[in-house]
Image (cartoon, rainbow, N blue to C red):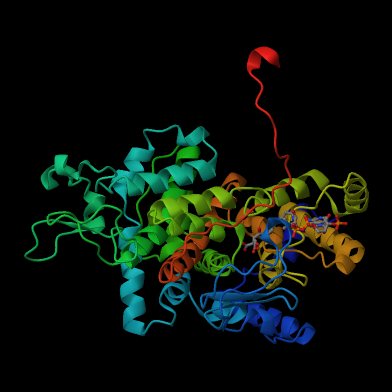
Length: 479
Ligand code: SDX
């Protein structure tokens, strides 16, 4: 009888190479393209003459809120593109930095621009003062997404421009933060008396008339760069603090994905781990007018500032119906325990009219292309570990059960179904999974906020009033 180690040795499959991951993604693309055509939906991809007529369901289902060039989700075909580039190609060939640049600027960067942008994001991940401020809060016991929103606000706290009308009281010298990681936040243009804060921008027009010596707008994209880099550092700091460790600073040899992994685990990631995290950040970066993107845009449309707008996105993403589903999926798979329990568990779940986490989607009525990428990657990552292999096998059995029963209702796996298995295989604690979603989606939130503000109109839908009329007021003594 072979012992476990011998069996494991026999089974030991060499760790996949970074190149093999690209092949796996291109294989998944081929399968997707074989199963569905990739024609854009004319009713969702044509320029419009406002006002338009659309059929709107509860939860604004079907409502068209704006035009956008940032990205498109073809729900009926299971097709996702960012600025015209297919998500399979971006995951196969791009990096999260390059994809963020594409989402923000609308084109792929030149090699020189990419090198400069990647270096700039790495430098902006260096936020020691914000990390120090975070340690003065009980981050280790806070909900990770509320800690992430706190950290984003602490990044903003360098925003020492006045939030009140009494700008006269504030002397520029006093409001200059001494915080060394605020330096990128404030630049003093040559010859100017006052520093310039990047969030006070041409787009985020100040509510107060700019007095002569007030801070003047600069490039709003600076804020987006700070947020894309800073949210990754804040998320890693949360993971480190929850593990009872001190926060780490980014290393020069890694990009954003590798530095996130290093800063959260304290271990230098392998090239494969770095590449898989990079791919995961690419495929979560943007997804049309999902709830958290819409939340960010609504806040920004009031001309609030981008830090608070991104905070709204973080808040919306935290819900289990949205970004929080990836944590619920791994808990659900642990509860099922084994592929042999799936049928019974699924029967009981549907009988109780409960939803299966990681399945279904408001827009996708086909297989989520992101799940088509994360599924095979999770298979690769779990091959060499018996427990993880069982988790993956349970997931596959559950997918078969759900799709055979609910596929006719267009219920398929979504992005959250396999992402948790991937993160768990990389040693990331499950309570951080949704913060990783935010680390990626901050790029899409920023891109859509900046785009919307170019033709801003405050979001203000109506509600159908179905209450009473002509009520007579009766004083409390007569009620
Ligand atoms: C994300 O919007 C985005 O783009 C989001 C996202 C992004 O990248 O930003 O893609 C990320 O949020 C993915 C979704 C993660 N959430 C989950 O996995 C939670 C489980 N999924 C469901 O809660 C649900 O599918 C939603 C919330 C995702 C979508 O809900 P809808 O569009 O409001 O659909 P619904 O609740 O009205 O359901 C329609 C029907 C119902 O059956 P009937 O009452 O008509 O008979 O489909 C059924 C539902 O019961 N259904 C499910 C189901 N999801 C829908 N049945 C079982 N399990 C499910 N998961």
